[in-house]
Image (cartoon, rainbow, N blue to C red):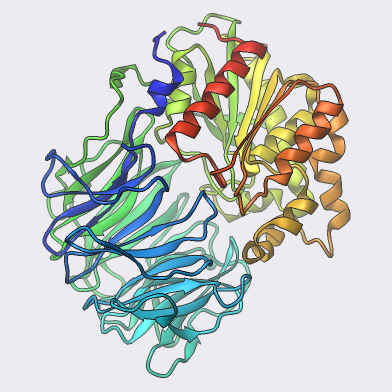
Length: 602
């Protein structure tokens, strides 16, 4: 066991979100100051220069293609109303938007004279498309398309006369449009059928095609080319058992990188288009095995920046030579003095659940795990259309170093295992995913190192709902529960979540109009009398996704039932705890809670 406290583990840094500037300078975000800020770097391992200095998190950074200036995004207190800013070469910052609305970055034009974004400034529940000159501010932006749903932008065409528009009707129901900036005409290039995903959109160099990942006619995602005018779809790379889940194309050279999600691990392929649907491949990038993404090519596409993380590798930026595959780590995000060799890797495992299906997950045990005495934290991801993958987690490494095993199941409804698996928990099947947690506990109880009387349920967002549902459905199985920004009542959640999200969430959970009775039945708040285990409830007051009322009602009702409850709400946070001082307080309290009610084997 190692003696570092939770504050030390939370001080492990992450560098990510890199982008090459026109002169080869790398911009990236790192949380050295306690919140992610923009830094730049001219060569690997050099001393980086901090470029933004805010208490709030910076949400993205994008270089102008022609000038030494950056666009970046920032919200306030986690409210997700992202504003757009321009950072000049001399360090001055100007707010480009200045409205109390959400702004979703859509990219620079190729000459850097204009920028595009989607925003709900006209009507809160829908997103419109705007184009703005680099010297324009606030209300100067031109409204080029009035939307009626969830629109986002995927970039300017090679000749800057069109924008690529993505529309999400639900997590698994998408459409792709092309917006002609000369005529204002929006043309849908997909067929509008239900339940088809189109993601990771990139223009082809000729401007006549669109490369994307889609599951049209398949269970898993594959790489395809869409005709930008008629919508004809051609396969480029088959998906097979695992998703091709991301692609980046340089629209000048045709060089590209695509990723395959193999049981949570990223496999990268680098190549160059040798025709509309043919790819000449180069050697595989020499980066650590784990999770990688966020590709940014340099000006001539001879190399690209990539964010890499793994169970035992804190998040850093690598730069890969396209033709050779050789890679070099450019950033040096600190491990806070904790020896990296002490970090513990997870094993990919599977267990049988109630209907005979195998549920995948990751299981890690502490270096010293005494037989029959090791407590376990079952950590459930949010989403639910998401996936726990082998990426670095300082909280997980703290728990492992202090005697806790950690189990991360990808219960039914998770992504990464095909469309059919993801739909196994929809609407009336919601509680089947909770039954997968019961089976997880049964599997854990058979591990020789595990103490079955000291198993904890922990999760955030939808994972918070899973914690509360597990505690109400199977109260005898749990020693404690930790609910982070979780859903306690689906009715009040859907009534109070941001209006721009409600339709998408109803597609997954059921609608207030048609499914209210079901939503009431599956809401943990309505079964709170079953809870026996101590409960920790953590939330941000500014959360626009799962409003803080979810935490308040479950904490109040559980306390009335005599359950030991700790509630912690941060006034300057939203959907998750992002500021370092708040994370230290939050997880310090969680550790004390676990020590009190569960205790470790260390």
